Length: 266
Image 1 (tube, one colour):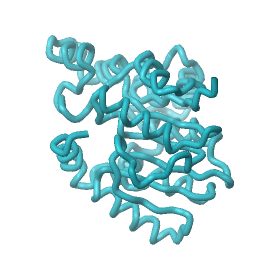
Image 2 (cartoon, helix red, strand yellow):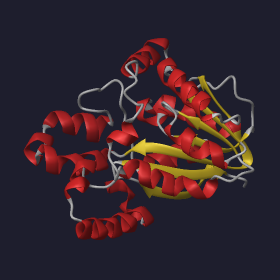
Image 3 (cartoon, helix red, strand yellow):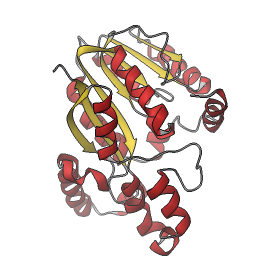
Image 4 (cartoon, one colour):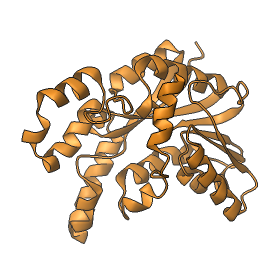
């Protein structure tokens, strides 16, 4: 990743906006709720966990009490400072956080972690840099370990936001060119990058990783809409959300998604 590009990403998060995003999404924050649901089975007391793109430490604070060791890495010094403050307040002695570049994790030893969580960097990497990140995740993961990548779907971005922004405002040549053709955000074209499940499989297989499964984690509606549902409506909604979460074929219509994989031992 070039220094110029890193500076842009660091500047984007300089105001600490990532901290508290889960809380701001409300009691029914789909991305966080279903991301944890997907990750939970891989977190055990004997596991060493590294999270690349840890932000202010949301998942760190959730999982540090449940594992042997947890290391958070983020490109933003602001995020790492906040994560360290949270660790200090919590008293967790098995957790730490450090500034690092997902495409060059020079401070992290080969095969040193059981679970590698890459929960943000791919949002901000062009495809050529994405390959470097994937390779680094593979390098630091133990041979019998698991790697979980978060990515943003090209189709899912439109499927989620068009009903609220208005299809007439979304089906524009500019958005078509940016999101669907180039895989970039239509506003922050040089900072946010989108993908597809097929591209994720292709890119990870090229680096010698093998698919475990694909999962979508936020679906079709805004979190604020859930707050307006009745208790009975939410009950039905979460039946639908669980169905989408369990169906790999529905992943392409989700906004944020996870790709869970392992090293190909063949």
